[in-house]
Length: 111
Image (cartoon, rainbow, N blue to C red):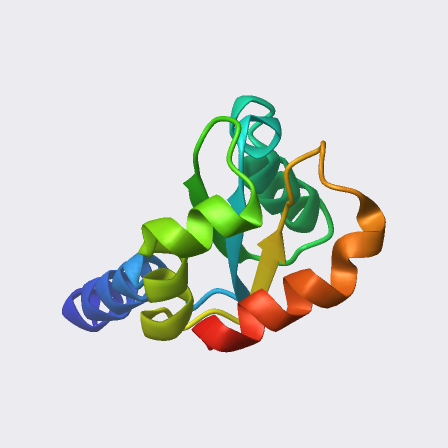
């Protein structure tokens, strides 16, 4: 009997050690605003506070805009090769917000 209890206890403990799949995987692409404020971690903690587990990854470069990231190639490769549910793109702050159509065109060329 003691052996059966020990086996059940071991199974229960091991089951808690198995890593759980995240509810979502999110890729952040941006510059120092994303990096220095640790936006990906802030979002992960916010999600955790409501019981959602998200896995975050970031591709950041100080002062970079979307054009820089696309030219560099790293962000595009992460988008293509990663299994992300969401991609958050932070454009360079000096780029006018009415450049949305151009940004969408650049992103579609990567994908």
